[in-house]
Image (cartoon, rainbow, N blue to C red; front, side, top):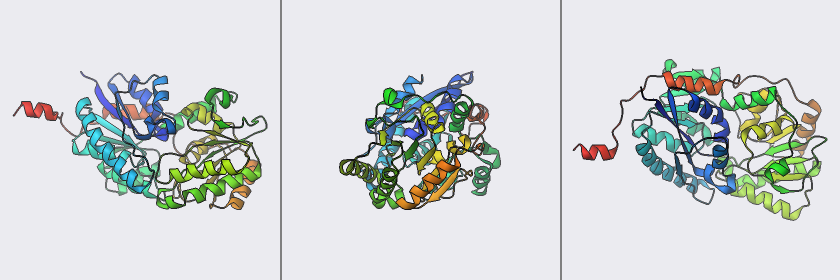
Length: 392
């Protein structure tokens, strides 16, 4: 009996951390064959070139799809989605997967969903049914309506997907694969490594021995014109506190140029010996860095998911994560340097909590692979357009 071919499309830095353990479980499952497609910002050096870490982790990349247009605004995001749709259709026709899996809610992921749907390839969607306060929610819910199998992280997400009209038997609570990595870090934290020796980065080699914080702040697509203003408030807060800080570059989204330019301008105008900047660190090392930190600052979903499990204090800025299920490790603030500073100091005082398994128990990757090996395929085997031409 031939193995079932599972094609997973990874589009960005966070997508890989969200799916890494599922990739391993699919690769190792006796009844499954992993097909890995890497596209969009996951291929770009300026955003960390995540594909290199995938290959270092032992994954074979079956196809690369270059699709990102420069500009980081609403027009280029839309055109990038269109290019991805065109190119992914060609890739799917060549690979002939039995199931395509797409991840979460980034704008590039809807291209995966549309291409698979119109080619009658069953679509599995990871992390549907969640609520956020921006355009990502529209994308996520749209993919839910296109998907055939729903691999959700929580009971509430399960209930939301069913209430959207999806059949309960197609919705599976697997947890989030990123929690698998967080679980490993929590059980085997080890000592904090030297990130400057291992990953380079830019800026002063700050002293981490007495504690440090991590900053990861992305533009909000529905407020992208204010991205530079938003990041400037955070920069002032962190600069004025003068605490050791490891800062990560933003994702590729509408407004990321504003965020990046704001950081560059601030570095030119101020001496910031307390901040070191990174583009990309592999998932486990990043979570190990977070685990040993005193606080995460910004608006990344890692503060909602992995940090709630690890018990790492979080200062969540703005509306990007509005509506998500969360633990008690967060303080929400506006884009205001005074509020941000006060919340950081409060979280330093609060310290790490026990953590809660809100988004999974550490076994999501295995559960996802098992579901994909057992579900009934929704469509019969397709013929490629080449085969169709030969048969006419």
